[in-house]
Image (cartoon, rainbow, N blue to C red; front, side, top):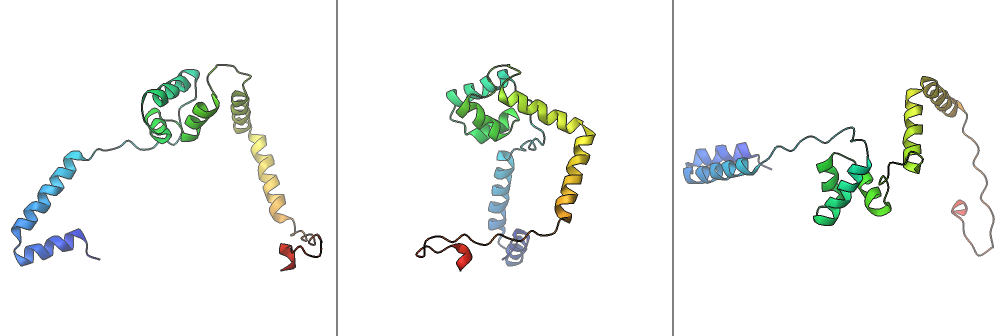
Length: 149
């Protein structure tokens, strides 16, 4: 497969200046239409009832996809789906399941001893010898199990 640079060089060697001019016009046209999109957010915005209402407003009034809404508002597409399908985050109730889960996750991240316990669990799990797989259960004589093959 030829690169664009090699193609241009071949056109120059053959003296095809009209083709090079057309190629340059196409390149200029593409440059004017090209937009520099902002980079994707690594950490999304905090979900608030106002942001949830904005998501619902965009979903109802535009034909934007969930991904487009998420990108425009700087949130995860999964969060947009939760708001649209399940009505999550619409109230500022600190006892709501999503708020409780968020607070627990923040507490785990802030607690250094929790990280150490998790690391110890991982080390123990990897150090334990492989457990013997249980023998396949026998069913009716006409039934084949994966373990039988």
